Length: 309
Length: 293
Image (cartoon, rainbow over all chains, first blue to last red; front, side):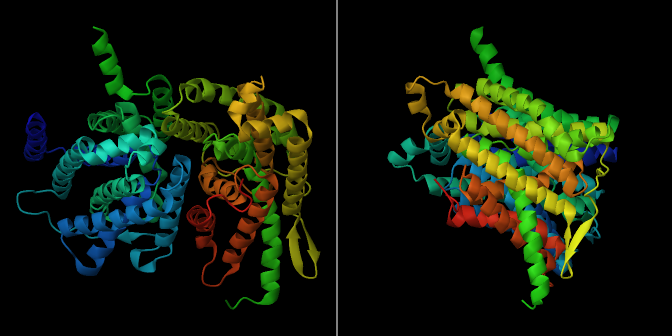
């Protein structure tokens, strides 16, 4: 119950901010932060519970973004339809890629997902209709009724998506799926021997996680009113989605949310005040420090200190 | 297909040279990941670091190959240090090491890459030497001399490494640790020390590969991202830890890439996907690779 009150409050706060704050950059930056909450939450479903590292966030994210852009170009479909289509396509990609590579040990899955990203990028570089290497300029439609600016609308939409993603991750964590995935992480052989359908669970998790990443990518073309393969399939999305759960803690749904919020906010601040190189360096250093010194993330640290008292 | 035969022949020839080069850049990973099972995704970043060190030494007036050889001892120590750290922080702790180990090396690669950007900028760097830029011609087929040099070093490296692993005491110990670590422990040997040594060798070989990388073409800090695919594709296709397999797999990749490059319907914009597609194909169809154990 407390979770749902919190979720309602988050959406309410986003709407209130959209109504009261007129400083547009706040929403521009806020959108990115909330988007990384969705991406990290999605990543954690497979990475945190089952222990399979996915470097392919940009592949799913980018496929979602391109699905939305191409659909918009072809039919001028409304944003909600674009998001649904993006989730469907990215989910299908997760299913296919999962079936192909999740039989193998973790590291092979990790490398295969990098491969997936590069292949997707190459496909879209060579697809003329979707703009090829130069990209596609998109004209935003006017914002829908209560919103007076498009960015504010996208921000609120992304907050709603984040709430849905977190609720889904929380449900999975507590259901048979989450238990099965954790059994796989602890010992795949033991899980298989005790009758856990390991491959089926992993593929399902990969599918859900991919669909969420695709959905998170769908509003991106409208956010930038532009889409281009180089930045859409950038490995930096993979880094953010992987680093945030490591920082916050992979054990429960709260970890990626806290990690993504802190990391992306800090990144936004550093990109503006220092430089974007410094921002990537920061992520690398923070990632290494956390995996070495605090393997259970901030939540793990908090629990350890709390338990001692 | 519609490719003229002489063009195809030239592409295959170039592919063989390119393949030798790919085998050379994957050799270090073939030891660290193939034999030692360390998820060393930072391998290409370390190689690019080697290229930049070569660049600095060439600036002092050295030949790039000499520079690469000189870099081997410091990189050997670097590799030992990296493995020691990885062992203490992850392998020793056991079970949960997988995810965090990969994330650690990923972070390390990121730090190296951005460090290079901060130190050298994002511009491309290259080196000068007598054999760079020239080419020899045989029956209207032009062979760039720099590729031939890289190919020669690659073959020499493979022979030395194969002999080392099969003939010397330490080399055999490295193979033993890859095959059955607990058994080695029971024999009274210390697997961690052997792995540390092997990782040092893998990194030293990577330094020489970095020198070849900058001989073959201009280098930029972000180049490691392309080579993640190429090196892992070669190592997996080879069958983990097989040195001769690494050469064969390098040739397969090199020839496929250079045919895609001249193919009228595909061309340069598809070339980066070749290694990754090959990798996915191998993982899906024959995960143990061509010469798998």
